[in-house]
Length: 173
Image 1 (cartoon, rainbow, N blue to C red):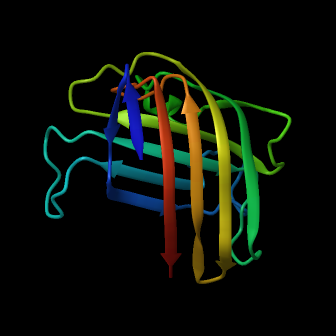
Image 2: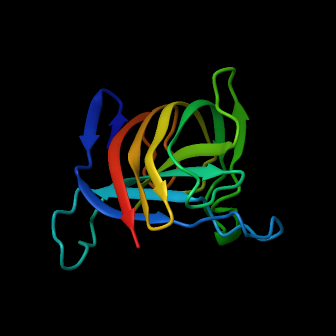
């Protein structure tokens, strides 16, 4: 993962966290957040995160997603509006306008940068494109890749001008 600030690309090579939260049985009245979340950092320590750590998180959400539905590939194309993060309730209230090549069922994709002293009071408008591939989607394993290009501010506390994400994931029960 990397974020562009002006003409300089900042790399975030170290996987910090990844998560999967199925939403097939979730009430539509209560949003627990996106189905997939991945965060990388410049912090290479495995013990305790540095106070000055910087990084990038990418989120992929689906209208409905259940484990065990088999392999799939989704095209990502559209515009995501990520609200400012001043209030905890606004964290996942993104708006997404799909483009002509966007796959149905994939609700939204977006990025957020983080750093210790940043300002998260700006709404970000991101042009996103890429693909989300599930090579395996079984009851006990989710494995695949995410490739995402973002033009526009990355949202969060240290917004960049653009971002690029290329990662493999493997969640096992």
